[in-house]
Image (cartoon, rainbow, N blue to C red):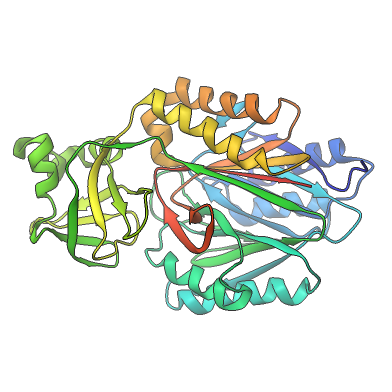
Length: 396
């Protein structure tokens, strides 16, 4: 069959931002020749001077539509990397995508999602539309409203997937890329269509270790009560009161990653992971994503083997429905990299490559959240996941 969609990846670890962007984009462009790029997707360290980085990419590519985000670590076919820049280029003879963006997602998240999707849909009016890939600010706590806004523009049957930008675990300032601009508190997205098909796989590899409890009081991303008891009691019961006190003082992040909360919405059989980011003096738990009252909650535990097996399942799901895979994008939770450690994090990417094939271009990043449908057959219930790996296959 004709090569209706081709892709290449370029990478650079140059310490100077402009040269890193130019070098990564230039390498991808040389491998793409003689095809002209239709889209550039950029994953880069927040340590770079962001305007200079994008300037270097523009110098190499010219006015190619560009999207992407800063990261908590970059992913290329060779494995996890840091303080670097990866550029994925896509090329096709027919129109395959359009991009959109909106700022102000911190103040008006629903409107920002609606505007970004509307802009992309306006510039890509033909059908079929196969999915919307978003790059959002990973420090926002209201991403559910962003998704609702996107659905208002594209409909509730639209596939919405993506990753939330990181900043190398500094938790201060993330960036979303739109052409030659580095934005913050923004929504950037790509609407794919035409010959492009999207395969998606999402897994985490954690299992419940506590009895189920009902979430009886929560607001936004703060969990106050479980079965009308202080939420921190779930940690006290299974880890001990002394461990909880140490978590308050100094050890929250390692414990929160090793023992995340599993939230099971009413009527679902799947678990939505939430990392605990703060313990309140009132026994409340501040989490890495929104918490829905009335859901069930259990304490979860993962190990390196289960997490690696989950990555394989995600890759298998992503490529299953495609006759030909052009490239793969990986959004992997930053917490998973910390749990796995450097050796097993490299094994995770290697395991994905075994599934998709060593010759398939691969790029991605470690994120502060992964956006994907909660159930594979229920696109309307797109949710923010934390602690998960999201594998997106683009092809035909």
